[in-house]
Amino acid sequence: MNILFVCTGNTCRSPMAEAILRFKKPDWNVKSAGLFASQGASASHGTSTVLSEKGISFSHVSTQLTEKLLEWADAVLTMTASHKQTIDIHFPQFRNKTFTLKGLDGDVVDPFGGSVHEYRKTFDELESYIEKWLAANKKGQ
Image (cartoon, rainbow, N blue to C red; front, side):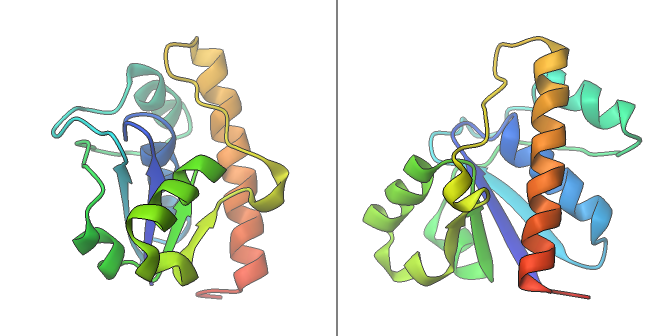
């Protein structure tokens, strides 16, 4: 299973989601990318701190979303409805496999620039919705 998480800058939410799913499903191929990512940036300090606290080892370098990554993915999970909308507009051929992680429940809050506490809340939110996504899709079980 190839899963791609997408957010804005690929330093907070999508790398955290990538790390969580890799931890839960080590046999899956999981990547992340950003719509407006600067190539080669590391994960934010808050992301690294929270993943370390949870015992999840993770090395990350930010990646810009590309058509090649979208082709690679079996499912593309975005952090917000606007991320999905942007992909749908620019890459309409991938609409059938692009979804917002939270579905109709809204957007994953961006902790960028916030305290470590905000990153912890984002981790909990991501973990919860990844579990819901796994249960709903019954993939790899």
